[in-house]
Image (cartoon, rainbow, N blue to C red):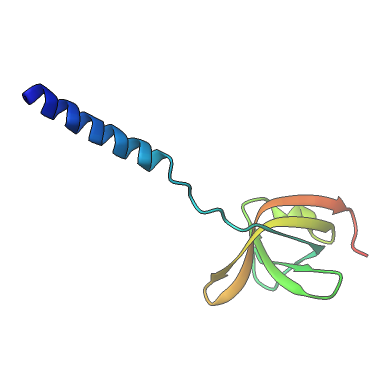
Length: 100
């Protein structure tokens, strides 16, 4: 009797563990923006201006200073930081050494 109770408890725990491991996590939506990167007014602030003139504040763990006045593509997601909409770039790709 004890042996069957232990076996049942083990099977329940094993089933719960498998169920926890197979639960998919929601995917984050990534977006890509392309344009000319410029230095913002504040330290560490960068602005991406797209071909249609849309300006977006960009932040990244990458060193964005080396991309100023270059055309880049940034991939990431928009977020709100201190009441401002900011594009958090996970990937910064160099497209051209100048802006058009």
